[in-house]
Length: 223
Image (cartoon, helix red, strand yellow):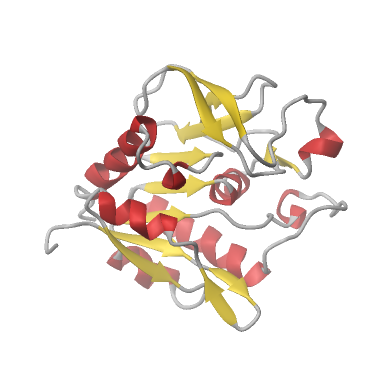
């Protein structure tokens, strides 16, 4: 455990409680990392110096305030305290070239932090026959340096999605209705956003490869 990378995982705010689903820490432990939960308060410079990598997990919605849109029905924004903290911590991690993995809400937050926009509600803003809120659907993974290419079945529990990619982000996985299901940052060691929930599918080879790559890259971040 002494040489295992420390992975910071941000937490949800629910009233007087801080919460996180256990799949995230279980996945990190399974591939050899040490999960450390970071509350949405405190000095993000300090956190970014202490952790080797950052995982921003799933959650509710990004407030469209961040990309200059008016809130529409069906959107349940997370508290600004949480998203402000995560954007600040993300930027500190990027300044240090440390690995970042965003899952579902985490992917959407990364996109917005780099100047991208979102579909606030897929059902009302996108013409699609796919139910992105529940169940499974196919994704096509295109050429990239992180995951195997091809068609895969993934779980889906989201109602928001990337509309315009943020600066420097490149989409590499797409659903049949052309929504972006994964991206990475160009010219960066490891910064990935994944729209599905690989932490729930750790018996799946695609998920294991993703988390193992995340941990391996985290072992080399000494800045």
